[in-house]
Length: 178
Image (tube, rainbow, N blue to C red; front, side, top):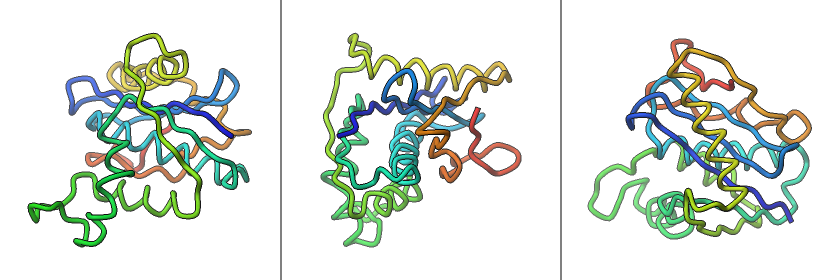
């Protein structure tokens, strides 16, 4: 079983934003954008983790995702089936927020054994704190126009290579791995 924490960060929300997933000090990834929301960072961290584990040939392993975002957990475990039935619309008929990421997450989770555990943010959980630190560092790097290490990933696979761009993507139109 793979246990990983995911987190997102946005300075000003929306503002410079980052995402990160973290397994251990030798296996993590981070990236971000000049402008996005915290929720997009949280969702992208999960998507990048799913894609990295799949690309590394580890999609058959059980994946336990630790998240401090109830929005992420509820989106993929409770709300997504109804959204799909309603054509990616909420019960009130309004469009699902971050539908591009939700669709990508739905696809990335197909056939996977993924479970989620909520952890209280900023409460000393080592994996959550490590993911939070990397996501915030990515957001700060965009704010200061600096670069940072995007992490070693799973043998060099971070999942960011195919990450969905932020709603207001970088000038080249791509999600950016720092």
